[in-house]
Amino acid sequence: MAKKGTFTSIDVGTTKICTIQANIGDGPDIRVIGFGIAPSRGLKKGLVVNIDEAKESIKESVRKAERASGVKIGSAYVGVTGRHVTSMNNRGVVSTNRSDRLVTPQDIARVLDSARSIEIPNDREMLHVIPRGYALDGQSGVKNPVGMHGFRLDVETHIITAAVASIKNLVKCIRGIGVEIEDLVLEPLASAETVLTPDERDAGVILADIGGGTTDIAIFKDGSICHTAILPVAGYQVTRDISIGLGLPFEVAEEMKKKYGKVMPVANGNFDAATVSSEDGFSFAYKELCQIIEVRMEEILRMILLELPPGEYLHLVPEGLVLTGGSSNLPGIEMLARDVLRLPVRVGMPRGMFGLTDVLHDPAYATSVGLLCWAANHTIGEGLPSQGYWRTIGRSLNRLLFRIRRLLPH
Image (cartoon, rainbow, N blue to C red; front, top):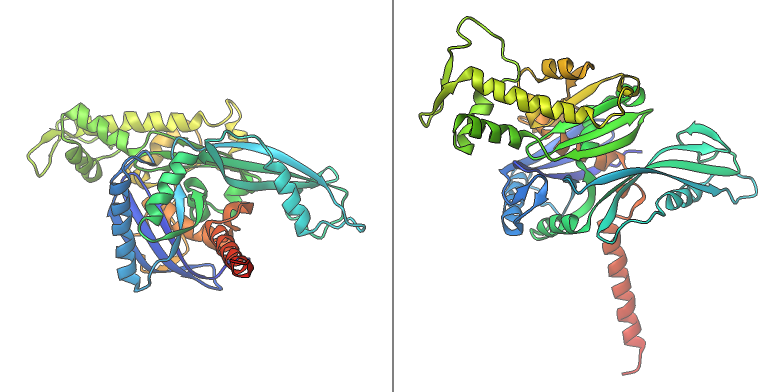
């Protein structure tokens, strides 16, 4: 059952920080009451590299959202990305211990505990343990076994881990501005919440969120996640190629990419001779700009394809590729992706919003909106205790210790 209330999401990206506040009620739609967008500083490829700069960028975004909504932000759902994120699939198995052999929620908790009982290095922590499907007495394909009869309960899970140091640095930035973290969510999982359809998830689809610093990948099959990956190449590399190839300052290259850039420009009579100029007086051939963009985007698309088993991708993801993220706004990217991958391709837009959504109907904000959908639809941490849970436990223990001290003789 979807949760209700006011939720906040913070997407800490390499090029921008986006904070959204929204009310979620009985209906499926999200009512946005405030958002704040600020340039990102102190981050590189999804990782915090300067805590003070990152904290100020997040603070600016949060304050803008608070001014728009008039509501103070106390806690938020925060997106996580970066090359440090890894994933694996693992199984768990338990026996049902009731006399009537009915599966209970407690059995679900036990079998998930069994699945997460794997050794991970001390410098890593579990971010998500997501059940992909259950089996009862060998019968697979069970989505919700609670209330069903069976002696043996199996679960297939997708486990996502992250580097402890990277997570702690991100958490320190958020808490440093007075905002607590309700849950940390892998960004491609959040984007999928608002971009993909149930039919695509069931048949098989690959989502690629091409942002500023990373390309986040999630593959869905039979309605559940089966693979995630983070590639350390994205829009930043496109801009850098333009900067180097055309001899432009990085900021000018970014401006030209957004203003004139196309992935597969349509040739016309003046195409070869056409030149474009920036406000700073730089001029260059339009054809060269587009060719540089095309080469880098083709490389990124081929890297996405490498995440699929060779020769099996048509069977695995018949629904093809759904592109989202800011870099998917480049004109011609769908055509290039179809030519390179030989798969159906579409650009995914965040859906299901109303209210203050002037600029949010854009692939660049798929993660930000998706975090709100995740907040409403998912158990915090997918079976892992939330930050808020541990704060509650900590306060209870402190009160208990205080009472014990008062009873002890001085």
